[in-house]
Image (cartoon, rainbow, N blue to C red; front, side, top):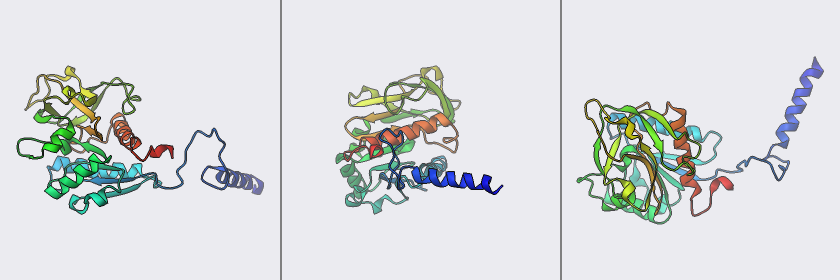
Length: 273
């Protein structure tokens, strides 16, 4: 009995000391790349001063990114006050994630503009891209690719989505089409797809039309996930309510988008370090 217990203990000791990151060297063709320190620094911004469904999403979003940081793979900071981040501080972060809001004051907007114009990374959800005649931020419109909020369905509902580019790192391991959890879906005018600098990665399928019960969208181009190639950015239309993190495929989309934006850093791909 004693011998039986001892052997597993010895085996555990040997294996644990042979793993990469410990004293022993991993073989040159070892398939895993273990970080010896946090790989990058991320800032997650959200606000409580938003529609309840957007706040619900943001609170779950914070927990989602905390789960991605199990084991301290990166430095994660969260804030509900973007005014604490002038450009000199903001530039320390490899990516800024905006869950349910965007910079509002002149100083906040100027800091974010400078950050993005100098290679910063951005991952924005749903209302973080909302803009209309009252937004008064021309740079944001250009940054997003020119689309202004046009209309939306109501109430929130799941939809069939279709991958536009199955070879892109964000979508290459996703099904060609799949159903995503319920959300309020924003349509934009003009469609970001009309901008030559925009690459649309995922769209709402026209098979969903007519879309809605109270407010019904009946036609039109409907991009959901895209990037403006002039910036290290990705936008995802999802972000309304507490149902957004219930689906594995959509969560994989979120992880892919996060990784991709980080991989394009001017400082090099942190996942290869």
